[in-house]
Length: 227
Ligand code: BJW
Image (cartoon, rainbow, N blue to C red; front, side):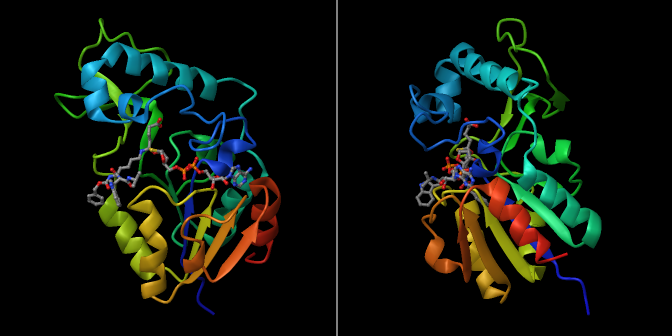
């Protein structure tokens, strides 16, 4: 039997039990902030110092030793190890590095990465573990995809979706496109579609299988049915 091609979309919910806030929950990441200020280029142009302060805070939080991958991240890494990197692709909307820390290799960060910054003039992407002082580094912006910007590696993502036998969506509310539309593509190519989330997402009716609960419990349980 051929090994299935599996595309896994992850969102903030997979990292919630690792100590990182989701976006849209009460007490979420954006509480106390206007999305238009911290998640658009227009907001960055208006107040680059304030926006860098926000991402400096998130970058510090991510590097807190208490923030570690949880059982869901490890289960996905084990799946890739068992089935091979050619057969398992993680497309994450998350800007954290918890999939990498858990051992996953085949990962696309479609919304960028918190531990990187980008030179606005040259496009060069640079590792970044410290605070950015805009007054010292006027060309460096967070390597984050804001609203109105094109997510990264979209051609590779669409290619993978078109070849998928199984599409699994984990820990995402289905509010943000194009990621929220991936399940439609998976359905069009007759892939099996599975939603693993704490609660039904906005797109829940488009999934054939739905399992609700904390990711650290339901993801390892579901993954064991595949290996
Ligand atoms: C648990 C759990 C546990 C909790 N276990 N689960 C009108 C219609 C359609 C589209 C548009 C429209 N108007 C504008 C658009 C486009 C726009 C968009 O989608 N807007 C919507 C608001 C409508 N999209 C864009 O602009 C994108 N670009 C674009 O479309 O370009 C055009 C283009 C596309 C393709 C090809 C060519 C051109 C860019 C979107 C960029 C998003 N960026 C952000 C980062 C912000 C900066 C920051 O980091 O602070 O990415 S926004 C934010 O949302 C972040 C996330 O990756 C993203 C998704 O959030 P996610 O992960 O779903 O988190 P939550 O909090 O919403 O949900 C968490 C879920 O977990 C919940 O369901 C919980 O229940 C669950 N959960 N604990 C399991 N323990």
